[in-house]
Each structure stands twice: as C-alpha cells, then as structure tokens.
Length: 624
Image 1 (cartoon, rainbow, N blue to C red):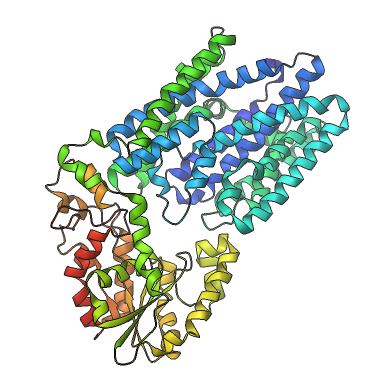
Image 2 (cartoon, helix red, strand yellow; image 1 turned 60 degrees about the vertical axis):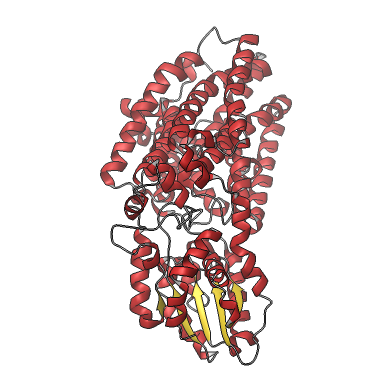
C-alpha cells in the first residue's frame, strides 16, 4: 500500500481504540466499556489486511513470503522487546507461583498462542487478571492467528469477483453464530478464541468491496458509527455479556467509521496531529500499558486512584512512544531484516524467550531467586492445595443427620468449604453432624426472588444467563431438602460481593421460614494478597504482620460491617482472627507455614490455625 492510499482517519481510529483500552485499564470508571477498543482494532485489521491482499493480488505482486515478512517486521520487534523487559521485571518482582504462570504466558505469547493459554487457565481458582502482565497479548494472538488463515482464503478467491465478498460474508456469519452458541456453554472461549472473533475481522474485510460514499453519506455513516462505538465505551461494563450480540455494536460502529472516514468532516478531530501521533504509536502503547498497570498494582496492592491512573497513562504513552520510535518503526522498514536473516533472528529471539520461560515453568517459578528462609514457604503443591479446599466439603455433602446430635448445615461457595475444613481440622465432627451444600460463587447468595438481582446487579448472571438457572435450581433444592428441615444451625459463607450481601437478610429469612434452624452468616476473611505473596514481597519473615495490615481489602471491611449490622449476634466474625490488631494481620502459622495460598483460600495449615484460634469462638456463638 503506497502513501497515496494512506488513511489518516484510520490512525485516528486507532488512537480512539488505544485511548479507550488504556483509560479503562488505568481505572477510569467512566469508560467502563473501554475494553471494546480491542474490537475496534480487530475491525481495522480485517479491513487493512484484506485490502493489502486484494490490491496486490489484482496487481500481480502478492507473495505469501513477502506478506508474512512484513507482518513479522511490523509486530515482532516491539512484541519481543516488551516480553523480554517484562520478563526481567517479573523475575525481580513476582513470587514463584505468579512468575511460573507469567513464564508460561511469555512462551505462549511469543508463539502467538496466549489467547489459548489464558482460555485454558480460566476458572474459579484462576489468578486475578492483575497478576498477569501479558494478559493483553491474547488479542495479539487472535490477530496473528487470523493472519495465518485469512490471506490464503482471500488470495484464492479474489480473482473470482463477488465470490470473495460472499465468502467473507459467510465466514463472518458462521463465526458470529458460533460465538452466540459458545456464549451459552463457554463464555471464556467465546471471548478468547479466534473462531468466535472472525466476524469482527470479516466486518472490516467486507468494506474493501464497498464504494467510497459521498460527503453527506460519509458524515452520516461516520457520525452514526462513532456514536455506536462511544455508547459501547461509556455504557458497557464488566457485567455486559460479551462478545455475543453486544459485540455487534462496536463492530458495526467501527465499520461505519471506516466506511465514511475518508471524506467525513466529522472525522477531522481524529485527523489532528496529536491523534495521528497517538494512533501511529498505538501498537507500542498497547503493548507496554498493561505490564505497567500490573506492576503498579503489585507494588501498591490497591486500585489506582485518579492521580496514579493518570501517571500510569502518561508513563504508558511515553514508553510506548519510545518503543515505537526506536524499535517498532525503524525495524519495520529495515532492509537488513530480509529473507533468511529475518527467519534466523525471529527464531533466535523466540528461543531466547521460550527456553527460560519453560525452564521457569518446570522449576516452579525459579524458587532459587529467594533467600533460603523463604524457599520453604514457597515449596507447596498448588494443585494439591486447590483439591484440599473442597475435599471435606465433597465428602460431607452426602452425610446425613443422626438423631441425638447437633446438626450443622454449611451452605455456600469455596468459603463454606474453607469453614468446613476449619471444623474438620478442629475435630468438631466428634461432637456435631456436618452436612454441606455447595453453590457456584457467581450466585453469591443462597436465595433471591428479586429478578433485578439476576438481571442487573449480579455481574455473573447478567453475563451468563444460564448461571441464573443453575443458581435458582440450587436454591430450590436447598429449600426443599430434608437436611434443611433437620438442621439446628445453617451457616452461610460466600466470598460476598456487595450486591449479594445487601440482600442476604431476606435470603436468611426465607431459609428460616422453611426450617427450624437458625441462620448464621460467616463474614469475609480475605486480604488483598496471599500469605506467599506477602512473604515474597517482604523478602524476609520478620515484619510480615505489619506489611499485611496495609493490604486489608476495602470490600472485606465494608461488607463485614454491612453483615454485622444486618445479623447482629448471628454474624460470625472470622476476619478478627486474621487481623487481631489494627496494625497486624496473621500471614504464617506458628511453624512458619502459609495460612492463605491465594488471597481468599486456606491451606491445610491455615485451616488448622483457624481451628485453634477461631473455630471454638464461632461454635460457641452458634450455641453448638
């Protein structure tokens, strides 16, 4: 594509997309749907890549080797540089488990498979997004996978006239239909995997065959499309079911902006010098911004405030522009990176990332980096700990209440599993019968008859309607269960969210109306980091309690206060055993074993600690 074909409006559109993503990740809640900036990029890529292939096939100059060499020079230098620098930083900053996970993502990112990696990692026990400095590379992997298949399809069909456009439309329709179906069964797959995102690229690709509209039509299309994209950026949020039908709005909006952008007067603000500068450096800015945010959050342990968010944005633009100026742009047009030299350099750079990444993965995150005193704290089997959380809960769910003993029914998500482990480790099974009943964390409440809760307030059921059915089925089964009618005490424990906690009193009343049991509610116990994180952050075993006290989760404090007000002496306070003093929280037990293996779940040593220091108090409060 020569300079005569340059579309400044598309660089302006890139500026809009990267601004939305960076502001969203920096914590500016006004742009709660800023993540759709990625979808804007997908549509742009579909248009530009298809246009390149079509024009060069028609001119008789298209070459697959030339196409992929150009793509490699365009994407690889900046990506490799970002991954390499982030790897070095993570090696100094992250604890072994986080660094092990990061190492896997680094290897998969350089192999263009990070979207598959993060899809496979997803689940209830998955680490928070804010511990993954390369999470954003999932979108680059999707684009790179798109580049592998799309040019061959277009090149094969472009000489057959309208057949190429029909194929684009068919692929787009199939992809969108598959995406809608996947939303019912695998939301994470629908989000991360390429087949379910092809429709966005195809929407941009179809524009290659569209005739340039007149001035009035251009302005109407551009303005309408811009309003659609802005609506998505400002009105979508974490509870929006995405991609699915909602993705159609920013996708079609972007397509309309590209369609009308060449001649639209409304496009002039995005053709100004600052917008074009930002747009040209958008790839590099996108690459560097998320590691900056993740490492900043790691250092502070809290969400970015307005000043910190603005500083993170400024640093992202500065470093992104430097990366663009000294790495991305010079090497993109370098005559030295040609032929076998390019292949050799790419292969060598890939090996330079992959080899240490896999070695770190195999050795559990390079525990040798730690002082000897800290290695014991980090020598744990995460898979075994995750299985332990549910082991007693699963065993006791088929238990039955026997005459002549006190009966405890424990209801909830993995927090109820933690409490079950506390009782078991404290040998309370000798004195009481325990039966367990599990809910999905996304339900966040054992019963709710308020449809607004499911349709608007609960971010998990609003994005996955099938979860609402599952939650209601579990609620109905609980209310009709024979064990509920025999229970003396029901203890409800979830990792409470505010929208669930504020409706919990009504849920408890409903349970008590169906049972002679009294309902008690276990508060939240989590800090912002795990015991292992605190040890690694501190670099020594002394002073852990004071460090941990700085990382109390504001949601934990707020929600526990809310529960105490609602339930009075039916509220079971476990957090006071986590933080017995205002300026001290417990991280390790008496034998220097970690209590929490992630911010919210107990190790077996942690369950034993609470069995010794909290269980008797909680049992006494429940009069058992």
